[in-house]
Length: 77
Image 1: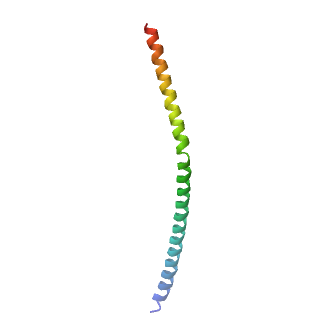
Image 2 (image 1 turned 30 degrees about the vertical axis):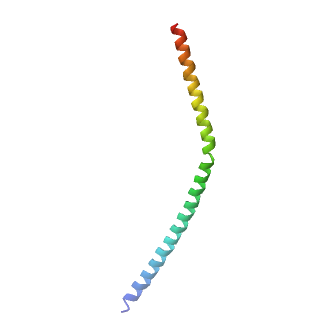
């Protein structure tokens, strides 16, 4: 019976280490989740600005294409 006592002590120590490791993983996952939520919130703040730049780019490209088409049309005549 004495042979089981060191085994049980070792097992209890290992289980305690595993439990501490899992607690650390849970803590780190919660921290990661908070960081991801913060990043998502910051990203949403830029939606309006990105939309304005997209509209500006579309307008510039459309105007540029229209002026190129007019120049090509004028060269033909």
